[in-house]
Image 1: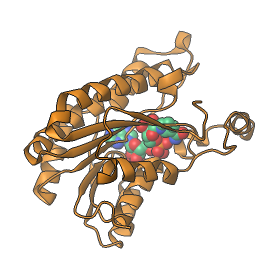
Image 2 (image 1 turned 180 degrees about the horizontal axis):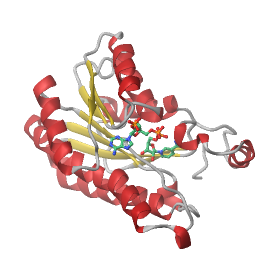
Image 3 (image 1 turned 135 degrees about the vertical axis):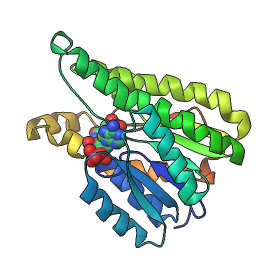
Image 4 (image 1 turned 90 degrees about the horizontal axis):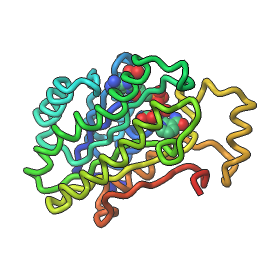
Length: 248
Ligand code: NAP
């Protein structure tokens, strides 16, 4: 259980859901970790303490990933604390679901800024230390919705499709520096983001999933361990759907 021993990981949005599962799994695998949150300060501190019990150094930092200057300050803080950053997981994300005819400019802008601009912000600033190190693994959290779209989620689907084009471009730009950039496209994962679904809606989705269940944060975290570790050293520019076969 030490696939990430000696590595430093930065995970955005680690205070709940998928991000929390990634923090815990990375700690179990021996990584030192910085993770961010926006509003869940108490929860974030509790997660940092729990993760540190595996023997890693873990710090929780309040930082809005959609803010360019805060992203730069965050990377500087991580370098000051750990001296390097080996794995960047751009996980922070929000939804503001509604049909196109009702969608406001604010709902569009918020989702694009938190889900897509954040990936630019963090990648831009993390690339400098990764280039110096001549190594790095960037993992960007998209969604199956970014691949096949979804009524009521034009803003979210656009942000998640944007992440895929961005990541493939970065993979081509920095592959020669031994920096990899891959995408995970989760299907329906049980977190706060999907708690709003009714039982009937969940059943309808589950009926369409070949593996006949919703996913867990751990299902996604396991793939992050693989993409962050040297086991995936020859994989870059790829999109891995973790969706119980939904995207088949
Ligand atoms: P979640 O339970 O709602 O948690 C979101 C996390 O992001 C929280 O830690 C939150 O911090 C943080 N966050 C929100 N805005 C942020 C910002 N501006 N800067 C930094 N952190 C921010 O979401 P989730 O379901 O775990 O989703 C995680 C990622 O997976 C998202 O990118 C989502 O789009 C993607 N995804 C999820 C599903 C799913 O079914 N759940 C499916 C496909 C893709 P606070 O706690 O402080 O608010």
